[in-house]
Amino acid sequence: MKTQIKKATFACVVAAVCLLAGTIGCKEKKGKIKIGIVQLVEHAALDAAYHGFVDGLAEAGYVDGQNIVIDYENAQGEQANCVTIAQKLVNDRSDLILAIATSAAQAVANLTNKIPVLVTAVTDPASAKLVQSNEKPGTNVSGTSDLTPCAEQINLLKTLVPHAKTVGILYCSSEQNSIFQVDLAKAACDKLGLAYIDATVSNSNELQQVVQSLVGKVDAIYAPTDNMIAAGMATVAQVANDNKIPVIAGEEGMLRGGALATYGINYYELGKQTAAMAVDILANGKNPADMPIQYLENCTFEVNEDTVAKLGIAIPESLKN
Image (cartoon, rainbow, N blue to C red; front, side, top):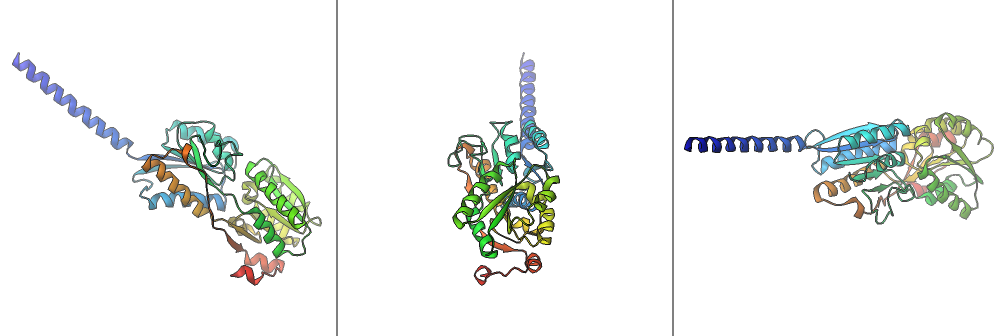
């Protein structure tokens, strides 16, 4: 009987050790936090937001390949791809998902109400129906807005193109974030006595034709932070600059494609700000439902010197300081 008890005790100890080893193994296996990222399309602003997010996490001690695993996917501008990627990230049981741009954010939010979701480069999460309100999201979604000072950008247009009487407002008609900004821009045009023409596109193949249709009708073009326009800015600028039509853009990345100037936010810093929110969730247990949408306060004037020279635009000294 004693022998049997000893054997049973030994078996229990072995089982306990095995169980403990298995538990430790599980912890090691689960030790790396999974962060899924879905980005709508490649262009300078969204790419900068992504890099800012990754760098911001690293600065806080969350390094890809060490204690976190980042699964980054780009939808290449296709909404169907956003849904497919979002489904993958949800099925993989990501600990947190970052969605870059409105369409990507909507795809993720429609598939999970449990996984914490942060968004960035979304102009107005409330109107995109991602949150109950920007002040108190009330859902599993929070993040940062890329709302730019649309009124100040229209003022900049008038400063750089003082003779302007009519503005072409170029945007994708299916992007909610663009429509939100366009309304603000139109209100600013009304205050300055500027007439405006809507120049909308539904796909990138229409860009050249739509911009060409503005030639002879407008004195300048305003393009908000629209993902389709940003991705196709080289096409826009080629037509506009060849016809001496200055393009005032919603963000700095568009200047690389040939736009004239902007007064806007830094998307890299916006990404880092989003990373700080991610750390609050991962390290401090914050709930996105209680985290207000955040905004980047600092804006800067940026100009494309090559476009300045091509168009013969005079930059006021007040803007150079």
